Amino acid sequence: MHTWPAFDALVQRHGGIFGGCWCTWFHDGHPQCVGRGETAEGNRAIKQQLVEAGVAHAALVMDGDEAVAWAEYGTPSELPTIHHGKQYEATKSVEPDYRITCVFVDRRYRRQGVSELAITGALELIARAGGGRVESYPHDLTEQTKKMSSSFLYNGTRRMYERLGFTYDRPKGLRNCVMVRTVDPECA
Image: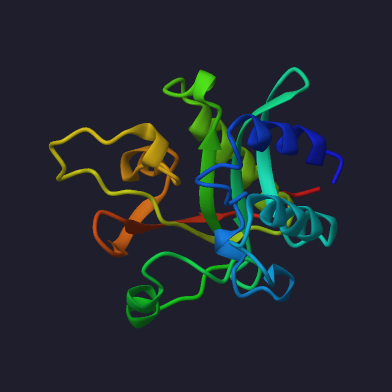
């Protein structure tokens, strides 16, 4: 909760992110998400409640006192909604312990490797929480010839996750995939 003001300022600077979502979309279905999607201010209030309740987690990348990026992560019960959910469920063989569902970088810091820092931070926090199987659902642009705007890459790319030690598991929807990595628990 002590990082809420920095997260709040980052999202405010970018108009609520993705049309006022406040990174609540993946929480949809969680009991505290009643009213999600109705207004950006309502989504902000929902996100703050989830953070205060300890069911919304993100690794923030800081530049001094200013948050410049985050990677949202959590358990499947904390983040029950994912894109292409029906296909995902039909092809799933193992339930992950954690998901990384959204990565956002301040527009002033894009294309500088900050997404990788945010994901690495999320993996470190997952290790501190006991580790386990981590899934993420990036865009698979390996066959794409046309360049895609980084503002649409809400969870990075397959190549970036491969650089971070994830392996390709399976396709999910059009131009998305499931990437997996096992994170060892951090020894105290």
